[in-house]
Image 1 (cartoon, rainbow, N blue to C red):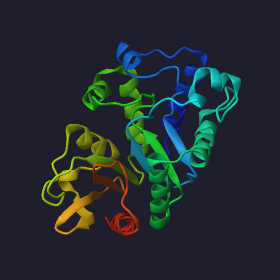
Image 2 (spheres, rainbow, N blue to C red):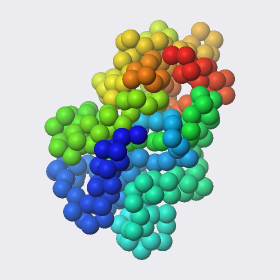
Image 3 (cartoon, rainbow, N blue to C red):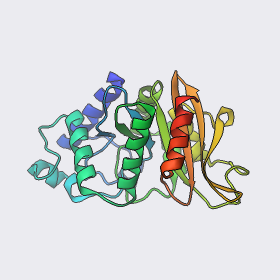
Length: 254
């Protein structure tokens, strides 16, 4: 993967540890800067991982706060490189977390194995924590105008360009995804960041209930690597066993 991206993340981590991050008013009011940035997390990611491109880390947890990191009482220590922190965080989250995030990680690792890849590298579009990000259009605008966010996103684009990438997005309940695949500006943008143009990709139904497709994926090839945008009605999750096998087959032959 890109040394430039890794280097950028190391600088971000060191600046946060020193308390010297130079951020805009938008970043300061939108994100929790007492929480350690998490630009990427390794879930047993090897030389050729499946990249899961996600929006940003969620609600701040106790081990992520500056005091906890400085005390070195959890998975993060101030003497770590971020590359080590990313591995420690992945192991910690797999061990300690349950619920939707853990189910998604398990499914992503299964998908990676099915496609013949080496674990999962979760890459965030924005490295800073927030309880929720209801106004994603504001982040979309910041990706073009905010100096730090724009620079980070540029590095993300370079690192995922030649990698197998999956983006998972919840969509509103509708008649059927097969008949209505209109996408929001945010979903279209993050798919493009992954290297996927949905308008030129194949649509693959993954979960069909009667005449209704409730989960499907746009799948294509870009930069020599397969890309997928998975849309699930009402849930930011991957499909079950059968749908996952269908997705794996599509990624093997986009």
